[in-house]
Length: 66
Image 1 (cartoon, rainbow, N blue to C red):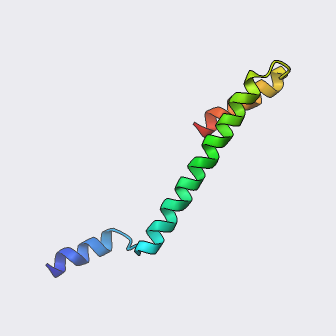
Image 2 (cartoon, rainbow, N blue to C red):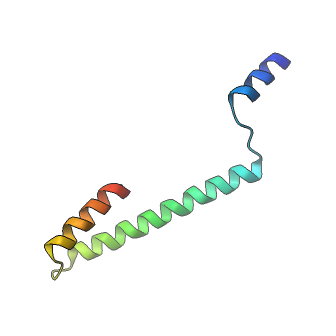
């Protein structure tokens, strides 16, 4: 049993529950920010007065975020 536990510890980094919670929260917050920005990009693209250069920039940013 000790051998198995030692192998797990050597293979995987230990993360405390608090550390895991922070990582999950950070990742979720980043996803919310990305989705918010994607929504902003979509609304910018639907405006009629958007110049072609801006459209290309928004499309490239959208590709990166997706």
